[in-house]
Length: 213
Image (tube, rainbow, N blue to C red):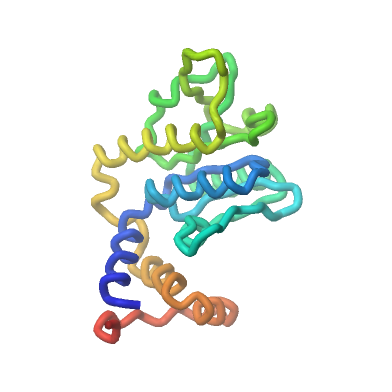
């Protein structure tokens, strides 16, 4: 790793938004989930969540630059467990779901801890998941087709959240601690060694920038 590469990594990590994330409910097409994760990376989300009864989800990693490498994906087998874990972090969950009480996605204050709940390609957010959310939201549309691709919907909502957070100055200060930034940088820098340290329950070594090229 070069100094320039390390500086880019730490700059990216300093803009991560610890209290902004998404929850993908049974999104089963790899290219859609990977597209969502790429959007997550671009708006500063470092950790995303998914629900899949098997406990695993497919992603499409066609290149070394795939966002799958830069965004941690935590998978749950049930929507109840996933939403409970997210709410335990103090986040409000907003389900992209058509309902009588749904509000325009732009009316939400995303500068507060927020999670966007997205449903699968076939049937959207389930009724059970929608009820577990704190609020239902919709993207107003005026065309013949009443819905958007799940990855497109994710991008529209997340870039609204990014815009609000930029105005509020939330990207100007790191939400990750110095220890967290060093740990993630080490995982990206030396993934095999990082795995060994994690398995042994040890802290990652501090990266000495002067030793880099």
